[in-house]
Every structure is written in structure tokens, then in C-alpha cells.
Image (tube, rainbow, N blue to C red):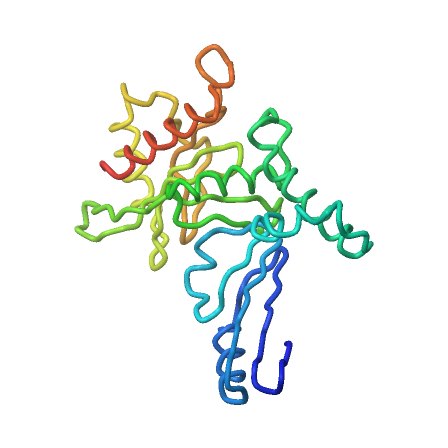
Length: 250
């Protein structure tokens, strides 16, 4: 918190890898507006996150890593302050690792490259959300496309999903109340019957799980063509759009 002339309050909420929680920004803004004549709120994000996290930050204004780099980089050779230089190099290192997804082999991707890939899809307005899932076996990054409601034989609607689980594309269904394996199996059979002849690469899971969200089918090696060659980022994006449109058509 920065106070100027006892009348202007500037609050900077800095996030690196964590996200907003507990209605933080509204609580900070309410406090500042009660005590000071003018209030400026800055949501500072130096790491990577889904655009979904920044939809409801008003009255704060988002300042992202790219904003800082655009503003500070021209002064890097003009300012000799060690703290300033270290901070710029820190931001540039994150940016370089994030953007490496566009040139590195997918098999070499680590967390920052997956974040860069998901960020790229997010900027194309293809995703509703992306972020980390703390799986007990191994945390991994997930990217969700727009979901759809699907009606089963019992006339009830269930949310069906197409998503990226890093090196695997998945189709799944939510049944938060009953966690019904019968509904899961019904959707799996229907999806695979509709995919037959169109997308033979969509495969049934070898072993089903059970829970409020259940995977029913997967696509492996989705970044390769039939000759096991990388198809390129533009073709990959179009391929993902086709799979998503298939889900929306069900």
C-alpha cells in the first residue's frame, strides 16, 4: 500500500504463481475507499495465468509481465541499479521460457512451455480456463474448452468436456450427484459411435475411473500426423478446433 499526500491510496496486489482468493480485491478496495479520497488498484501478475482469473478484478487494473517488459526494457541499458536490472532479467527469463513452446519440441516441454501454449490458445479465445490440477500422482496443467450439455436416455442433462491434459486430449462427463458409471458408459459408447469414420484416433479408455468427473475417451500423440511428423502450431490449433466442434455437435 502506498499513500500519497494523505489522500491517494495505491494498492498493489502482486501475484507470481498464485491466484486470487477470498474476495481479496473487493475487500482491499472497500477499505481504501473508506479511508482515502482517491484509490488506485493494481493487480500485478509476473507469472502466467488463465484470462479467466482476471475477468472480475474491477476496480483493480491488471498489469502483466508483458506490460512491465514493454515499459522497462528500453531503460535496461540506461539504468545501472542492480535491483532494477535483476528484476528485468527475472521477467525476461520467465518470458523466454514461456514463449519457448513455439520453437521447442513438444516432448521437451516443461511447465513454462505448457503455460505458454495454453496462454496462446487462451489469447485465441479457444479456452474457458486453464490451470494446474493437483493430481495425487503428479500435478499437471489442464486446459478446458467450452463445455456442452448432453442429454442422456434418462432425459437428464450432463456436462460433457473436451480438454487438454498436457500430452493427452480427453473427452469426459460430469455427474456430480450420482457419479453414475451407467451414464459414463452410455456417453462413451455414443461418443465413440459418432467419432467412428470421422476421428478414428479417438480411443476408448482401457480402464475407466469413477467420480464427479469421468474421462471416457482420449487422443494420444495429437501433435503428430500419420507419419509421426510434427504438424506445426497453426495446424495443431485447427486440429484442436475440429475436436472441440465435434464435441459441441454431440
